[in-house]
Image 1: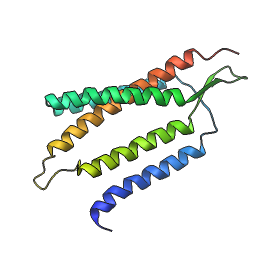
Image 2 (image 1 turned 180 degrees about the horizontal axis):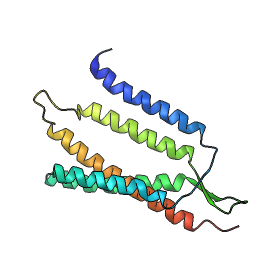
Image 3 (image 1 turned 60 degrees about the vertical axis):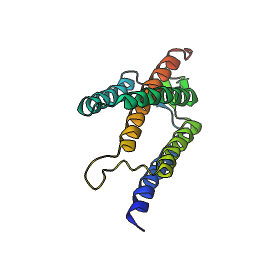
Length: 168
């Protein structure tokens, strides 16, 4: 197996294993913790800010970031909408359970992204001179916006839905 095939298939294998483990735990609801919901958006925003400050995007890069945020927000909203929220009868706590459809949705997006990058011949690694190609930089800008939009919209959607779960 050559190096490029390994770079393509190894991440997909790892993702497949992680998702297989996640599918095993779908039946167990976990307590909804509103303060923990803030951790991922804060971390993603911090990484976003650091990356934008260290390597400011071009005009096209900003446009792709905005498009990525919009698409990510739609994906995050849909994923949050597919998750199951219920109130535990004994403790009264709101419980969240990952939906198989939500996990499949994310898996399809991951495979679509890898296929698109492979089909366009985009490699996010540096070239022989140590510079990233402009297509790779633009793809990274769009994916950065996508991650930000998805994480924030997912958490917002779950928070809004959790407030609406009926008591008792």
